[in-house]
Structures are given as structure tokens and as C-alpha cells.
Length: 298
Image (cartoon, rainbow, N blue to C red; front, side):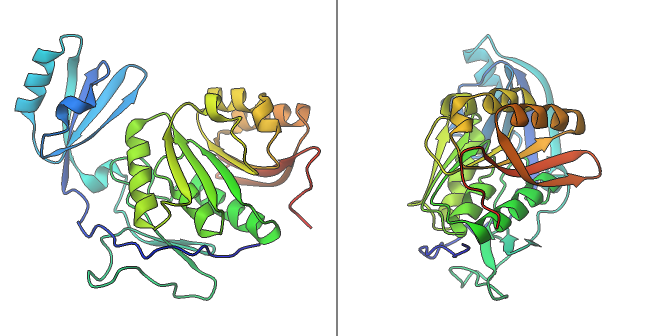
């Protein structure tokens, strides 16, 4: 049943978003620790042997030193763009069902938290940093809707969030009352961002951000599994015993052709889809449970 979790009042970071981002696209994995002391360094996004290195101001000197110290790295390109352009639009507050999601810079600096405006509303801070995901993507909204439906019918104490990104779904689960949430991402910058949002919302005692592979951590005990990951990873999850051990699941980020294959894998594994969401006939999200477990629906 939905029950907003108690939490310490979080004191948000009242800085505005970055005005401009200076992004250096490199081949190779950048040892982030060598840039940690640079005052304008934001973080590094690594994927498939390539790195995006983010600064809040031009950092030509730091990049030159980095390339000289690590010859295996090569600079492919550099970009400068407004922060809002990187995020695909202005990061702004929005409501999704019972959730009111708000960036921490849209508040009165004298406040220590923002209170719900509607009975039953759950307020959440979200600072996406430079990680993709302001919370407004259709798959995120559908996952929030699935969480709200599930928690109205079931008490969920433990959650495993695979591909947590900014941590918004993990924080939402804690806001709904879950006592233990493991938020997993293979990208270190995502884990760092999720940790920041967990702290902003006062859920450091309930939500643990972890750097790791979804495939390696799917067996962690939990009543609810949430996964919004690449489909190749999703296929591995759906055929694992760790996934089949979970009572409830929310799966998202699936394109139409991927959704058909996912449904086939779920049917073969004894999974039952309770509700589907389709946006623009492109994005698919599923709420369901596994055979042998009691359905959350009544």
C-alpha cells in the first residue's frame, strides 16, 4: 500500500544548472581521478571504449596534460553547448501521478524541503547533472505510473533498480515506503548522480547506489525488480534465475520489436504481464509478476 516514507529533511544544493558544458569526446577510458582536482571538472561518461569528459568551462590545458600523460587516449572532438541543449530542453518541475518532481534550484533558498501541495502527493528532488534523464521521458513516466499502481496493491519492502541512471525510480520507490533499495548502474557518473539525488531526498539510509553490471547483480534478493537497460542486457536478465526469483517487475526502455521478443521470453519463463504502456507505438513498459508468486492486482 502507498505510504510515503519518513525521511530527514534534505537541504538541496541551490546552485543553478551549468550555463554551458564543455565536452571532450575521446577514444579510450579516462582515469577520472587525474582530473578530480580540476575546479571545473564535472565527470566522465564512458561507454564502449569511448569517453565524454565534462567541464563547466574550457579546459584545454587540463586535456593537453591528460593526453600527454596517457598516450593511449586520443581526442576525437570537442563541443560547447548550453546545458539545456544537452538535456534536450529546460530542466523543470513536473507532476506524474502522485509524484511531484522538481529540480533543486527551483525553490526558496530559505526552505529545507518542499512540501506536497496535494493530499497524497510525494515530492522528489531531481538534479540530473549531465546524465541523460530529466524524468520526463515516456519510459520514466510510465515506470512511475507502474510504481504507483503496484504500491497501491502491495507492500514492497525491498527493490532492485537496474540501470538506475539519475536514481529517480529508486528514490520514488523509497518515497513510496520501501525500506531497502539497491540502485545499480554500470556507469560511474550515473552512480555519482544517483547518490547526489538520494542525498537530496534524505534517503541515504534506504537507498544504496552501486557501480556494477546488471547481469552480475540481478540475483540480489528483492521483491521488486526494475530494469530500464539496453535490450541485449535485458535479454540476459529475463532468462536468469535471479529475475525469475523476483515477485514483481517493471521493465522499460523497450522498442516495438524488442518488446515482442521480451514478451516471448517472459511467457517462456512463466512471467505474467499485468499492464502494458505504449507511447507513440515506439516505447514499451511492462508491469508484471512471476509464476509462483501472488499477483499484486486484486
